[in-house]
Image (cartoon, rainbow, N blue to C red; front, side, top):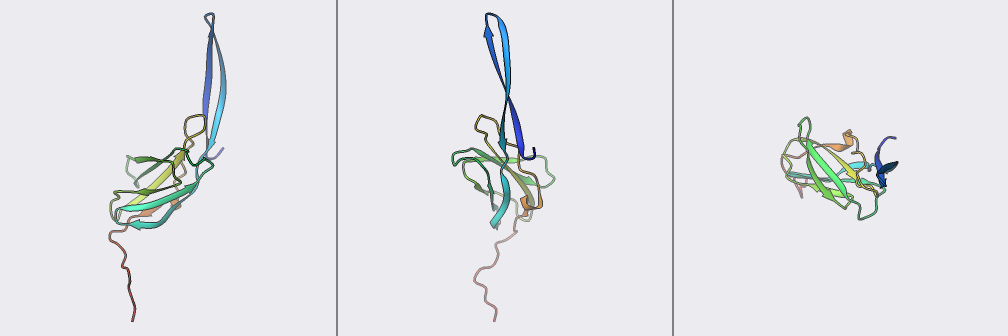
Length: 131
């Protein structure tokens, strides 16, 4: 199941020293349609996505410079996030996952060209007129 993570729930009951267990599964679909918004300026970029969670669902967003080991992670209840403190002229990748109703999280979104972007080294010019 692409984009689905299964969380195994095991219920253990002790009755008179006898252990009884029952396993069940909880699934939660991953966010979809990850996009980088129009705001990609020196130091920040806006990202957004869609998911089946309700407005109060917890979402984790993570980002890093491509081919580096560590991720920066933030938590939000929104379906968009402004990635802060980005290095100018660096190529970044990002992912998002959402909290599942029964606990745990979905899979992270896949890394694709839609989730990769370059941060501008300087702000684009504004109010430019060509004569």
